[in-house]
Amino acid sequence: MDDIDAFIRANTAPTRTPLLPELVLHLATEVTPLWQATEETLRRTGLPPPYWAFAWVGGQAVARHILDRPDSVAGKRVFDFAAGSGIVALAASRAGAAAVTAAEIDPIAVAAIRLNAAANGCAVAADSGDRIGDALDGFDIVTAGDVCYEKPMSDRVMPWLRALAGAGKTVLLGDPGRAYRPQDGLEEIARHQVPTSVEIEDRAVREAVVWRVLPG
Image 1 (cartoon, helix red, strand yellow):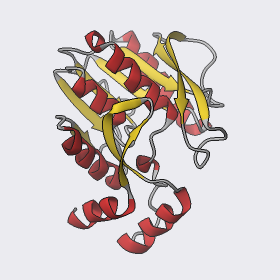
Image 2: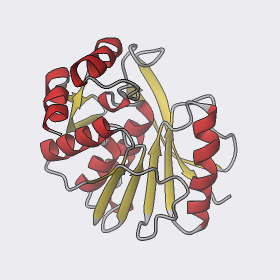
Image 3: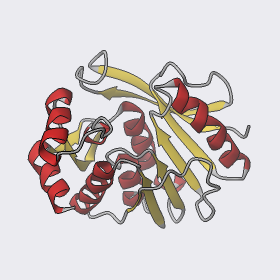
């Protein structure tokens, strides 16, 4: 784990995004050099792209909503799915959630979440398991940012999120209009203009919506 922590520190910089100045994250500025460095420095092939090193628009929108509405998570148990950098989990912790878990199957992302939590003085547990299909007993709120960018992912995740909503959990989805976001079964609760990088998006500012997933 020490080599991964050192790699993250060497290839990112502590950064505050314009939408979320309250939080500091270990973020990269370019995709390709970091991707190459991931395999070359850590000598591992087949690793996922370094999604953890960028503050994705959907996650930023959910995090902003939580920080603006701390009452929505205060005293509750939050599960942040496909957490990436952990930005939503950090926001939930900062807003007063009773317990926060950030789930990521990428081991480098798990390390980044831990480092980001420490940098912000937040209590966030990291979960490296594939939790899709899990009932997530013990959690009140489930969050997911930018999970509809590919059809296989969306087809697998959305029925599960709807089932969680049907079981009484509050399920929040952050999405900037990804191609495979469902057109129904969602209730808009917030909308944000999110400054971003043309390195990872097709424009410098994207509009992202926070949706409440309705029971399916």
